[in-house]
Length: 318
Image (cartoon, rainbow, N blue to C red; front, side, top):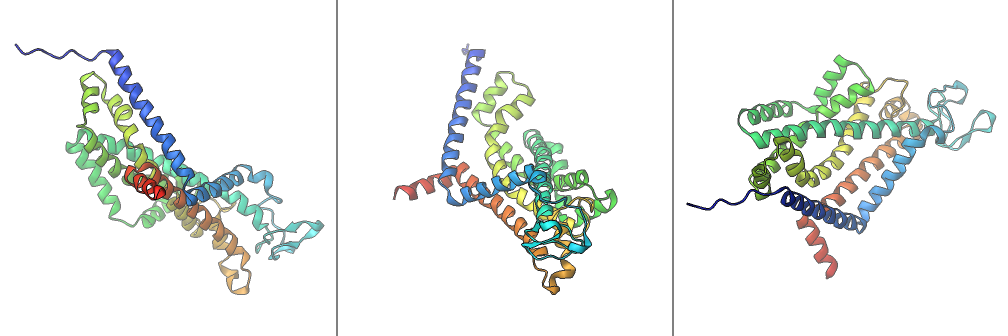
């Protein structure tokens, strides 16, 4: 009679789990050190820190109420003083509103929409990808076909259609932009799950009687966080651009909420009259924020991808 191998004990399970946790922490420390050696990643992080600081403390930094209109102070040039010796450092718009104050308040909307939409889309896509890749069968077919149908339509047209029906609003634009991102994460997570579900440690967790929830979210998910983090950093930049485009078309947040996209939209009628500051400053804000997320994404990709990291380390030793 063949001898049966003893079932793994709880102590063995805790030991394996502790070793896996220690390995992930070591990899995170190594990735962080790699990020610190990347010049452009540091530039991106510094810009994002400034934008985040502005978004949090914008109401206290803004010299004016962003919605206060003063027709007597309309279209002042940058640095020109208005009534009461108050200086409009970035000029004023066609309604006499301070461009700097609206720029500071707009940072909060752009970052909030970008991060919240990615959180919504990333959560939905990760769950769908885990379920699709682990179970397969008709569940996989249904979820992937839904994604194919969504990808068959230009995303910006779908967003416009839903926002016309739902109406402008911060929650609506976050939901629309977030749901539009789910298939990207679902496909990545599905591919990773298909390759990991037959690994030895997944088989061991299944043999130890772990629940499906535990296998999916405690065994498989921690091993696919790296590519998800990289994709999320790039997607935030895309979502910020989408929000600016929808606000430019008047389909973003309500008109009384200052956003960079709406500021660009309001500057259209004054571009030919040499009122350059109305478009240049919000355009620069969008440009720098999007570039910083792209720089950060490049740094994360190099730090979290073992092949990229080995290439960088080999170059550093030469």
